Image (cartoon, rainbow over all chains, first blue to last red; front, side, top):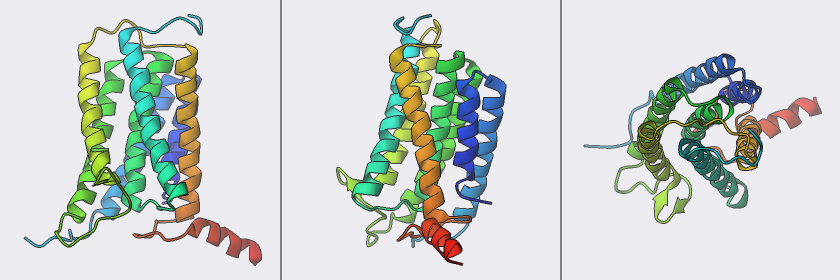
Length: 52
Length: 187
Protein backbone atom coordinates (compact mmCIF):
# COMPACT_ATOMS: atom_id res chain seq x y z
CA UNK A 1 0.00 0.00 0.00
CA UNK A 2 1.48 3.31 -1.07
CA UNK A 3 1.55 6.44 1.09
CA UNK A 4 0.58 8.65 -1.86
CA UNK A 5 -2.48 6.51 -2.64
CA UNK A 6 -4.95 8.50 -0.44
CA UNK A 7 -3.94 11.69 -2.31
CA UNK A 8 -4.25 9.97 -5.70
CA UNK A 9 -7.76 8.70 -4.86
CA UNK A 10 -8.69 12.10 -3.38
CA UNK A 11 -7.55 13.69 -6.66
CA UNK A 12 -9.88 11.37 -8.58
CA UNK A 13 -12.66 12.35 -6.13
CA UNK A 14 -11.92 16.05 -6.77
CA UNK A 15 -12.08 15.49 -10.54
CA UNK A 16 -15.46 13.74 -10.20
CA UNK A 17 -16.72 16.52 -7.89
CA UNK A 18 -15.51 19.18 -10.36
CA UNK A 19 -17.59 17.59 -13.11
CA UNK A 20 -20.56 17.30 -10.70
CA UNK A 21 -20.49 13.49 -10.34
CA UNK A 22 -21.49 13.80 -6.70
CA UNK A 23 -21.88 10.14 -5.75
CA UNK A 24 -18.65 9.03 -7.40
CA UNK A 25 -16.82 11.91 -5.73
CA UNK A 26 -18.25 10.96 -2.35
CA UNK A 27 -17.35 7.28 -2.84
CA UNK A 28 -13.75 8.06 -3.81
CA UNK A 29 -13.44 10.47 -0.87
CA UNK A 30 -14.62 7.70 1.46
CA UNK A 31 -12.14 5.24 -0.05
CA UNK A 32 -9.38 7.78 0.46
CA UNK A 33 -10.47 8.28 4.10
CA UNK A 34 -10.41 4.51 4.72
CA UNK A 35 -6.85 4.22 3.36
CA UNK A 36 -5.83 7.24 5.49
CA UNK A 37 -7.31 5.53 8.56
CA UNK A 38 -5.44 2.30 7.69
CA UNK A 39 -2.15 4.25 7.39
CA UNK A 40 -2.91 5.94 10.72
CA UNK A 41 -3.40 2.51 12.35
CA UNK A 42 -0.07 1.44 10.84
CA UNK A 43 1.80 4.50 12.14
CA UNK A 44 0.08 4.66 15.53
CA UNK A 45 0.54 1.07 16.65
CA UNK A 46 3.84 1.70 18.47
CA UNK A 47 4.09 2.73 22.14
CA UNK A 48 3.83 6.37 23.12
CA UNK A 49 7.14 7.94 24.11
CA UNK A 50 5.94 9.05 27.54
CA UNK A 51 6.54 7.81 31.06
CA UNK A 52 3.79 8.38 33.58
CA UNK B 1 -26.02 31.55 -12.15
CA UNK B 2 -23.22 33.74 -13.57
CA UNK B 3 -19.64 34.02 -12.48
CA UNK B 4 -20.47 37.41 -10.92
CA UNK B 5 -23.48 36.33 -8.83
CA UNK B 6 -22.53 36.43 -5.16
CA UNK B 7 -23.25 33.19 -3.23
CA UNK B 8 -25.43 33.05 -0.09
CA UNK B 9 -24.03 33.39 3.44
CA UNK B 10 -23.59 29.62 3.79
CA UNK B 11 -21.96 29.60 0.34
CA UNK B 12 -19.52 32.30 1.42
CA UNK B 13 -18.86 30.23 4.58
CA UNK B 14 -17.96 27.17 2.51
CA UNK B 15 -15.68 29.20 0.22
CA UNK B 16 -14.03 30.85 3.25
CA UNK B 17 -13.38 27.50 4.96
CA UNK B 18 -11.93 26.02 1.75
CA UNK B 19 -9.73 29.13 1.57
CA UNK B 20 -8.57 28.47 5.16
CA UNK B 21 -7.70 24.85 4.26
CA UNK B 22 -5.84 26.06 1.14
CA UNK B 23 -3.88 28.52 3.29
CA UNK B 24 -2.95 25.82 5.83
CA UNK B 25 -1.77 23.42 3.12
CA UNK B 26 0.14 26.19 1.33
CA UNK B 27 1.83 27.15 4.61
CA UNK B 28 2.88 23.51 5.11
CA UNK B 29 4.30 23.49 1.56
CA UNK B 30 6.19 26.75 2.12
CA UNK B 31 7.73 25.33 5.31
CA UNK B 32 8.66 22.15 3.42
CA UNK B 33 10.37 23.92 0.52
CA UNK B 34 11.77 27.08 2.14
CA UNK B 35 12.90 25.62 5.50
CA UNK B 36 13.55 22.11 4.08
CA UNK B 37 11.33 20.67 6.83
CA UNK B 38 10.20 17.35 5.34
CA UNK B 39 6.82 16.09 6.62
CA UNK B 40 6.77 12.92 8.75
CA UNK B 41 4.16 10.18 8.05
CA UNK B 42 1.78 11.59 10.69
CA UNK B 43 2.24 15.09 9.22
CA UNK B 44 1.29 13.73 5.78
CA UNK B 45 -1.81 12.09 7.29
CA UNK B 46 -2.78 15.43 8.87
CA UNK B 47 -2.46 17.08 5.45
CA UNK B 48 -4.70 14.29 4.16
CA UNK B 49 -7.25 15.06 6.91
CA UNK B 50 -7.44 18.70 5.81
CA UNK B 51 -7.68 17.57 2.18
CA UNK B 52 -10.61 15.24 2.95
CA UNK B 53 -12.51 18.04 4.73
CA UNK B 54 -11.69 20.33 1.79
CA UNK B 55 -13.20 17.78 -0.60
CA UNK B 56 -16.52 18.08 1.26
CA UNK B 57 -16.46 21.90 0.93
CA UNK B 58 -15.59 21.47 -2.75
CA UNK B 59 -18.63 19.18 -3.03
CA UNK B 60 -20.83 21.86 -1.36
CA UNK B 61 -19.54 24.57 -3.71
CA UNK B 62 -19.79 22.50 -6.90
CA UNK B 63 -22.98 20.46 -6.26
CA UNK B 64 -24.78 22.20 -3.38
CA UNK B 65 -24.72 21.52 0.36
CA UNK B 66 -26.22 18.39 1.86
CA UNK B 67 -26.19 17.13 5.48
CA UNK B 68 -24.20 14.08 4.24
CA UNK B 69 -21.31 16.34 3.18
CA UNK B 70 -21.19 18.12 6.53
CA UNK B 71 -21.48 14.78 8.38
CA UNK B 72 -18.53 13.31 6.50
CA UNK B 73 -16.56 16.56 6.97
CA UNK B 74 -16.99 16.20 10.77
CA UNK B 75 -15.92 12.53 10.61
CA UNK B 76 -12.84 13.46 8.54
CA UNK B 77 -12.06 16.22 11.05
CA UNK B 78 -12.18 13.62 13.86
CA UNK B 79 -9.78 11.43 11.84
CA UNK B 80 -7.35 14.32 11.34
CA UNK B 81 -7.75 15.41 14.94
CA UNK B 82 -6.87 11.89 16.12
CA UNK B 83 -3.68 11.92 14.04
CA UNK B 84 -2.59 15.34 15.35
CA UNK B 85 -3.45 14.39 18.94
CA UNK B 86 -1.39 11.21 18.54
CA UNK B 87 1.58 13.32 17.43
CA UNK B 88 1.09 15.82 20.27
CA UNK B 89 1.10 12.89 22.74
CA UNK B 90 4.24 11.45 21.12
CA UNK B 91 6.14 14.65 21.94
CA UNK B 92 4.51 15.58 25.24
CA UNK B 93 7.48 14.47 27.39
CA UNK B 94 9.33 17.41 29.06
CA UNK B 95 12.74 16.71 27.47
CA UNK B 96 11.28 16.15 23.99
CA UNK B 97 11.90 19.05 21.60
CA UNK B 98 9.12 17.97 19.26
CA UNK B 99 9.22 17.35 15.52
CA UNK B 100 9.83 20.00 12.90
CA UNK B 101 9.54 23.76 12.97
CA UNK B 102 7.39 25.93 15.20
CA UNK B 103 5.06 28.79 14.44
CA UNK B 104 4.38 31.24 17.29
CA UNK B 105 6.00 28.76 19.73
CA UNK B 106 3.68 25.89 18.75
CA UNK B 107 4.60 22.98 16.51
CA UNK B 108 2.73 22.51 13.25
CA UNK B 109 0.95 19.38 14.53
CA UNK B 110 -0.36 21.35 17.54
CA UNK B 111 -1.65 23.99 15.13
CA UNK B 112 -3.21 21.17 13.10
CA UNK B 113 -5.08 20.02 16.24
CA UNK B 114 -6.33 23.60 16.77
CA UNK B 115 -7.26 23.72 13.06
CA UNK B 116 -9.31 20.51 13.16
CA UNK B 117 -11.20 21.64 16.29
CA UNK B 118 -11.85 25.07 14.71
CA UNK B 119 -13.08 23.44 11.50
CA UNK B 120 -15.51 21.26 13.49
CA UNK B 121 -16.87 24.37 15.24
CA UNK B 122 -17.14 26.16 11.89
CA UNK B 123 -19.03 23.25 10.33
CA UNK B 124 -21.45 23.32 13.28
CA UNK B 125 -22.01 27.06 12.63
CA UNK B 126 -22.56 26.36 8.90
CA UNK B 127 -25.20 23.80 9.88
CA UNK B 128 -26.95 26.43 12.04
CA UNK B 129 -27.00 29.07 9.26
CA UNK B 130 -30.02 28.63 6.93
CA UNK B 131 -28.89 27.00 3.69
CA UNK B 132 -29.89 29.30 0.83
CA UNK B 133 -27.77 27.48 -1.76
CA UNK B 134 -24.04 26.99 -1.52
CA UNK B 135 -23.57 26.09 -5.17
CA UNK B 136 -21.51 28.80 -6.80
CA UNK B 137 -19.75 29.57 -10.06
CA UNK B 138 -18.48 32.96 -8.86
CA UNK B 139 -14.92 33.62 -10.03
CA UNK B 140 -13.68 33.62 -6.41
CA UNK B 141 -15.25 30.20 -5.78
CA UNK B 142 -13.71 28.87 -9.02
CA UNK B 143 -10.30 30.26 -8.03
CA UNK B 144 -10.42 28.74 -4.51
CA UNK B 145 -11.58 25.35 -5.89
CA UNK B 146 -8.83 25.31 -8.53
CA UNK B 147 -6.22 26.27 -5.90
CA UNK B 148 -7.41 23.34 -3.77
CA UNK B 149 -7.12 20.86 -6.66
CA UNK B 150 -3.62 22.13 -7.48
CA UNK B 151 -2.59 21.68 -3.82
CA UNK B 152 -3.97 18.14 -3.98
CA UNK B 153 -1.79 17.39 -7.02
CA UNK B 154 1.18 19.01 -5.25
CA UNK B 155 0.66 16.95 -2.11
CA UNK B 156 0.40 13.75 -4.13
CA UNK B 157 3.68 14.47 -5.97
CA UNK B 158 5.38 15.60 -2.76
CA UNK B 159 4.38 12.42 -0.91
CA UNK B 160 5.49 10.31 -3.87
CA UNK B 161 8.89 12.06 -3.92
CA UNK B 162 9.38 11.74 -0.13
CA UNK B 163 8.08 8.21 0.43
CA UNK B 164 8.48 6.59 -2.98
CA UNK B 165 6.52 3.40 -3.53
CA UNK B 166 5.89 2.27 0.04
CA UNK B 167 5.73 3.48 3.62
CA UNK B 168 7.47 6.72 4.65
CA UNK B 169 10.49 6.80 6.92
CA UNK B 170 9.59 7.86 10.48
CA UNK B 171 11.98 10.79 10.23
CA UNK B 172 12.48 11.56 6.52
CA UNK B 173 15.73 13.41 5.79
CA UNK B 174 15.71 13.36 2.00
CA UNK B 175 13.44 12.77 -0.97
CA UNK B 176 13.68 8.95 -0.94
CA UNK B 177 11.24 8.58 -3.84
CA UNK B 178 13.45 10.66 -6.13
CA UNK B 179 16.49 8.62 -5.02
CA UNK B 180 14.58 5.40 -5.82
CA UNK B 181 13.71 6.78 -9.27
CA UNK B 182 17.36 7.79 -9.91
CA UNK B 183 18.59 4.30 -8.93
CA UNK B 184 15.95 2.68 -11.12
CA UNK B 185 16.92 4.89 -14.09
CA UNK B 186 20.65 4.18 -13.54
CA UNK B 187 20.10 0.41 -13.87
